[in-house]
Amino acid sequence: MQVAARTLGVEIEVLRASTERDVDEAFARLAQKRVGALVINPDSLFTGRIEQLVALTVRYAMSTIYNREFAVAGGLIGYGVNLADAYRLAGVYAGRVLAGAKPAELPVQQSTRVELVINLKMAKTLGITFPTSLLVRADEVIE
Image (tube, rainbow, N blue to C red; front, side, top):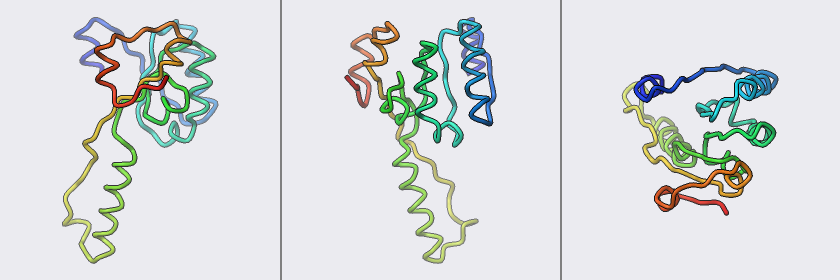
């Protein structure tokens, strides 16, 4: 992201959070700086706090991109690996190990199915309009 941002002449600020309080403080700091958008990298801390992330997005009127579950819960955009597909792959992998395969001999696997979910309710709240060309490419549009 940093390389792409520099190419576009855009500044990216990276904030780290490891507690619920850190998440609250990060949003407040970004809002104070009038940051235009927020991309949240996948992390179990955030996955377990979807409702908090949506509430902070609303409170600070911040365009935010995270995962599918975020958009379904009321966030603006979900983009990333399909978690159900990733969990399915993990189950298949575990099944192979339980059947006697040696983990060191199994190939590394990762989900390749990426999905885009757009929540038009949140877009309306934030005063954002998406081009039709993007909406037709989305895997799911929440109205």
